[in-house]
Image (tube, rainbow, N blue to C red):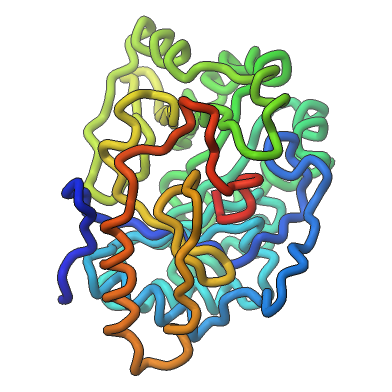
Length: 329
């Protein structure tokens, strides 16, 4: 194995978030409220399957063991199953996850599992069909819930469900969500609303602190679990009376970036050190044939020395990220 990817703060990178499209068919208020709009970039095609294989192989060679395939909505790619198969068959990759809005899961999740998908995150911001429609812009609640049920039927032992809690919208649903996971092996992941370039007003109007939720959980007997090295940023809590778990993703907490173990590659082949970084690093010129793998690993390794110790969200600075779909959330 080549040298482990590591930055100047001695953080090692076991986790790649790989976007395969920035297209999404939902219009979530906190991400794409006006729906998807093409970027208008020249040469703006998304990574091909051979390019995906080369970038994942380089990361695996340098110690990455988990890849999350993201979007936009990744299942909109007609070759999504080929992408899963390509990632899962890469030597060294132990976990292959995706984050999906779930609307295609009922029909396709069995094929995803067969292709090697080991973990699923589904975005589900409300258990009320009307509120779901209001937040996502789509009347697909029934299909998403059926997709979650289908995932368990085809053999997934746990499904993670991502919820962005927003004041005056769905924040009052916390008791309903807790009741929902009492007898279901679902890890609910409450994601704190994040300020991005296009979302200042929404953030100030609807932001709910993750710390308040955490204090409530601890007061009710929830206990913090120990993180694995290739886990994401969630603080995961368990309770003896619940089959499900709760994960809290709190990017505004002071220590959030200390345990950073993940890098991002956009759907057009740029390396992003941080969801809220100031620029992306072009990799695509080194993804055109297998002979450039050493140069690819070297470029990534060098660029890691420029990775900041922390994001600057506390200063209201979300970098160049206009919205969360742009580089895969």
